[in-house]
Length: 428
Image 1 (cartoon, rainbow, N blue to C red):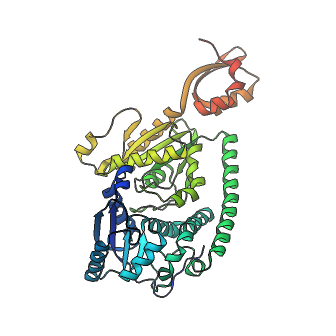
Image 2: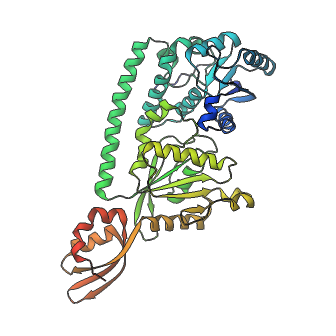
Image 3: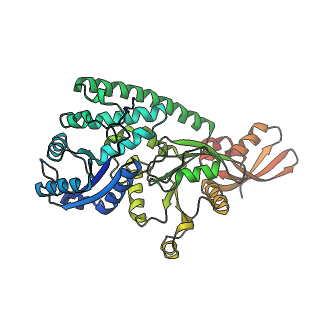
């Protein structure tokens, strides 16, 4: 994917944000204020200076302008007053709406989806991530080409122009469709490679733990603190895009694979979810899901609901899950008191060594199954080795020609290999 930057790309986007709350949005349960707060963060993450926010309540969107004609005039006056060069809408716009708004306002018009795709375009580093972002961008732009002319020819670069590049987007639909087909073919190859890696991990008996959570909840920080992973960490949305897997050693010495996934967000664009499904489905391969929550966020409950909804959509809602309420070190006492309690909930700080030890212990306990005793003949070294593979050997004793092993089993491993050991279990 080619990123276009010319000599004028340093001109900063100065934007007014626009949110339209319709009856349909109210029925979906989407929190408009949470969404608008996120739009501010998204804009700042993209390097945009946010000047003002306009809100409108309307039964249905205006087919021509999206917002009402009077609100368009209010937006024009606000843009003139603040010296804005961009308007960012919190919902998706059609190509015709973009064209009409550009002609009426003489502003660059960006919607929430385009803004998120732009951020992803700047963050993708691996071949897979770059392919996924370009595919999502072109899938988004294809039906809107008729409304993008002024946007694409506007000098100054900035948000909405990163990614596939202006020259690609100005070509005809057939060329873009061909490019989409080619990207899908390349992505299929990447998916096959990913599946081979998954299959190799399955055959090797590798136990997988996935970190999931709302964007900026602290997943990457936790991965770094637990495994010394060299990952990019920044206090901004979507600081990391490509999934990172590292080996985590548990207190018993057993190793598991800990994977950090892309952060979730309310109204995650459909094209993005579709393009990143192969990456997101890493969660389905996990034996255990660690749901990292920003305990200090005033929108904590809503963010947790969004994560659970996306896990459900991915088919991973039934996975064993532990909730880690992160950033407890910056929480007010009343915030901590309101958090749910129980063995599946932990209040932690990713920077507290004692909390990190506790997380490792909880992971081990969650993955552990029953404790059984096995009587293994002394000449069956293969079975003795297998016991160390399927669990933690707590004790061993010699009894004539046999060895008695007391083993705390790992559920997944024992389900896979336990049939070889079944006849050697000592019945109580």
